[in-house]
Each structure stands twice: as C-alpha cells, then as structure tokens.
Length: 122
Image (cartoon, rainbow, N blue to C red; front, side, top):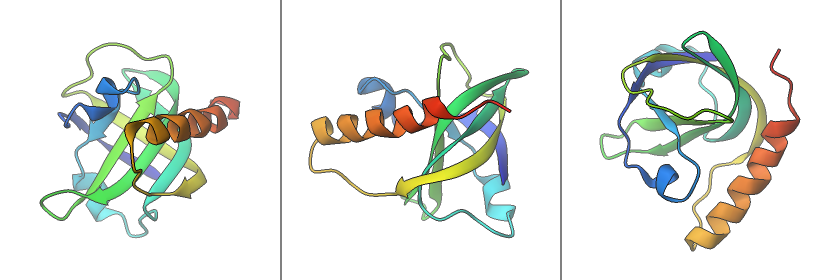
C-alpha cells in the first residue's frame, strides 16, 4: 500500500524525544479504498528521489477526527516541509497504543526501529 502527500508541520514531539517524524498531509490517505489499521509499520519512504527505511505510524485521530500519518526516516536529516513524500507501507509491527510515560515510549520506539532496520530497501 502506498501513501503519498506533502510533509506538513506536526507538534514536534518526535523530534523532542529523539525520533523526528515527517507528518503527511492526509488527503491521499483519505482516498484510499483500503486503509491500514492504526498501528506501527515498517516501510520505505521516498523523499527527493532517495529511499529511506522508515518506521510508519498510522493513528491516532487528531483534533479534526483524522488519523495522523507520520514516518521516521532512518538516516535522514534536514528540512522536508512542503516536499512530497511517497511511503510504501510494509510489514505490520504492532497495534497503536499510548504509553504511561516518555521513557516507556522511547524504549518501544527503539524496539520498533530495530525491526525497521532489518528490512531491505527494495
């Protein structure tokens, strides 16, 4: 499944805890006939003609009732705001859940990204 869109500004929480994400405009996501379930996935993101292994999060709903779509791109640094990103959603890693504290969230993200690291870019 492919999700594409422009990178929009998010809350900046991922960056604050050491895992910056690209937040994706959801217009394309909303038109998908079959949408992925809320959760964390491995995948590949293409930005500015380069492929990156990515941890992809679908959900939760934002204040407007739309699901968030964001991706942490391995080995990417820079400003992607306004650029188009194409995300190929790969293997399901786990269901979306909230964490009692930031420490537990960071530990889980590290586990999730260990799974992403093992995937191939093709």
